[in-house]
Image 1 (cartoon, rainbow, N blue to C red):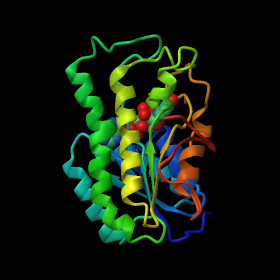
Image 2 (cartoon, rainbow, N blue to C red; image 1 turned 90 degrees about the vertical axis):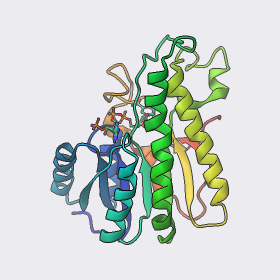
Image 3 (cartoon, rainbow, N blue to C red; image 1 turned 120 degrees about the vertical axis):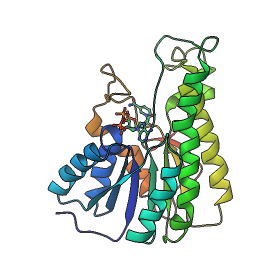
Image 4 (cartoon, rainbow, N blue to C red; image 1 turned 60 degrees about the vertical axis):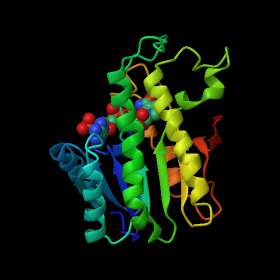
Length: 247
Ligand SMILES: NC(=O)c1ccc[n+]([C@@H]2O[C@H](COP(=O)([O-])OP(=O)(O)OC[C@H]3O[C@@H](n4cnc5c(N)ncnc54)[C@H](OP(=O)(O)O)[C@@H]3O)[C@@H](O)[C@H]2O)c1
């Protein structure tokens, strides 16, 4: 049984994949976890599993494609918890083939808009709505699920392992998310809040696909580390596990 430690975390897209593992591993540390999900039924199933492990887990409706739900999430957390210690912006979409593809000259406006809507604009909307509650926590932490595919440095290197993976909408949405991470970290530099971008690894999930080398059970390490940084921890960085990644 995980003893509640008074901290509260919201993890978006926590009904499955990396988000679920992150909620589980934060919950096992005694942190109360709120699963932000667009499908309440599958969110409740995930919460039931977590509760079966002794985790204090709750569910709130959050649909990144519906910006008005960000305000409702903030209202729910304010009413039930009064503050938010940890925000993990985990929900994300991939709407292209990535491997061996460069669609820069063909990517559709629809794919670009839908990808940026979920992977960038919704994250900004939710973060802005929740910041007043994060400021009420003693040591707020924000983790943005980016990707190594956000790295312009690595994309520009001919011999880099990510060089062939050029799905433009996904990659650029994560590069822009990294930009938001750096800008918000700068704005918050004189507060107790830390915000970082996380690359979880290439993970066997619906998004990562069956050829990914990392099992989902191992995928939460980076998010959990950044969500639980102590006062000396980094802010405004981009990490995989303990390693800084190039922008
Ligand atoms: N897997 C990888 O190799 C990898 C690598 C680098 C970065 N990442 C990033 O890690 C994060 C999690 O990825 P994953 O691999 O765990 O993906 P996943 O298994 O496909 O899960 C995606 C999660 O996002 C949720 N989601 C999608 N659209 C949403 C919306 N409109 N509103 C609310 N939630 C929504 C999904 O909810 P539903 O169940 O309702 O669809 C699901 O919970 C993403 O940001 C991804 O870009 C993944």
